[in-house]
Length: 272
Image (tube, rainbow, N blue to C red; front, side):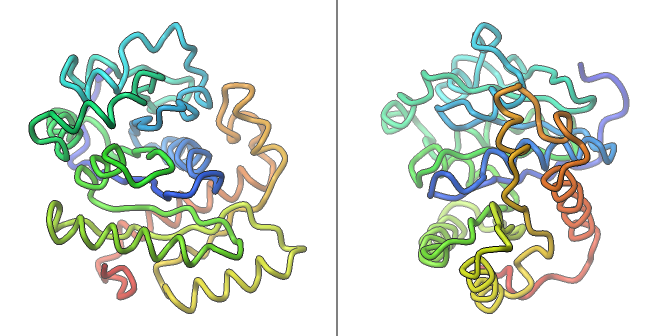
């Protein structure tokens, strides 16, 4: 599974938003697929007890006997949980319903905020990108992702309360950066589930760009039926319907992510 030359460095990105239903998991698996299509070696870590990223990548419950819960509690190394997906160069560490108990179990474990970071040490260099799909909450699982990550990518639905939720997440990121992971930065904010027929979406997009500036990606992910259908078929939308508007948007997002990675100039709005 790990044949071939290892990438020189691994970029770990937490895909996080404490609000559910904003396209977080959809963004994680489809951005990962698009990065793999750009000849990057990618690992998706499903850190959500709902396991939607695992389902969306076609990983059945029977294949999840080794999963990220065992990694978090120290019962298995991360490498033992990694599975191939149907996308060449893309792998997943699946989730299981047992992960819902991890929030409580972590409280009494040593280095409880660093469990995922410690587990990832042996994986750096095996992948170009590791994307962590976080649960829709700012608990210990998301905290583990933020401590392990180099950067945070925030999917943000263009809705009335978007900026309020974003402010809460930014405060959490500042606290993590100050106390636990000084190198953490904002990778970017991507507007999702965007309906151009809705005037509110346009207003929210303007407000978010006014507050966050260059941190907001140019690419906007539209509300798209094919994107919604794809997980029920166990496929990223890029495999389900490559030509649909949603798939094309994720390809553009991947290109924009790669351009930002290659740019030597820091983006001022990324300071947290």
